[in-house]
Length: 440
Image 1 (cartoon, rainbow, N blue to C red):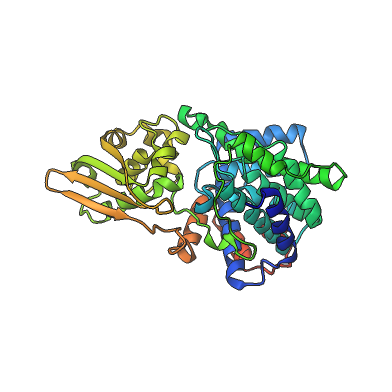
Image 2 (cartoon, rainbow, N blue to C red):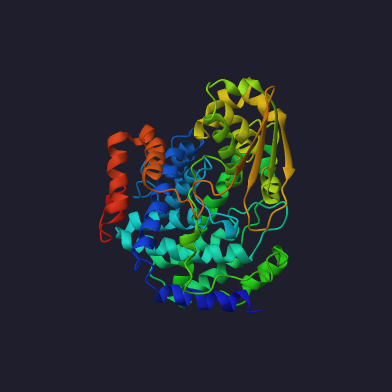
């Protein structure tokens, strides 16, 4: 099997020679990913912890980068950190199923921060973001994490440093060296905070984004990296968990296979939540959930591994809870950021239904995502099968749904008019427009 290091060197060479914006559909997919991540970040800046973090960074890491929704200007690395922290706060951003993680979430923050700092046109920012996405997605598929780890901040850090290398004008050889340099210090991030309800998990991507910029700078400055570090860290830290996985060949664009989320929850939660909302839509009364006396969810095993949290007490636990997602969707008729506000986390109706849910593994192919929800009342038991939910490759989140989500998340923070102007600019502005003008 070709070593990861040799494979990545070839892939970086391909990406640096290719024009990712040559296909209109790919460009639109990139714009949608950028828009959605931007919307999630602006919403995140409305959270007290995120705003406070940005304010503290401004004291020690001041700069000229002004992010929409953020009250203080920061340095490029500080802005990348704050943007990434904000973007993942509501757990509503993108992902790539085959990588089991979020390559865009890692690549966009350094690309945007450096783009604003340097007055870079949108074309270069999107090119850097997709380069980071393609590297991160490929390494996510190959470098699987160990049990007990959390995916954020691990292989996604390679996407961050790739995006930074692109924005800083590094050659393909220097970009490859940046990957090997990142491999020498790849974070080992834990799932434990989610189980315990600690939101330090949200800093994993932030650390990767800021580190990506710093490492790219050091390689440009002449710091050297060993060849083979990618293979070494995979063997030592990850146990070569993904060894033997057939990776995407050069020329295949993973960005075309990524998803955007309709709900503010881990993607695994979406399938049960979509089934719950389908059941609710068929009822004549909004209070029909009060008649439910049994709930069961048959779901693909990976969802149980990462989202089997029961009786969640804090927002991040609930975002990773299959049972909470179902209960909140049944009661609220929605699964947006508001589902994790204290009044809903303490809701007696949601708590009662969450306790009823019985979780069972479903026998499916390893790449198949499917859920079957059983909703029991005194009258009958309804069985709803959920697959191909909005956001899946065959059912992308586009058009009105994408627009509605952006406005819903962004308008409360920056106002309806500015939100509409920004949305139009991201989706339609010339690629030669400076990105700072687009997000102004």
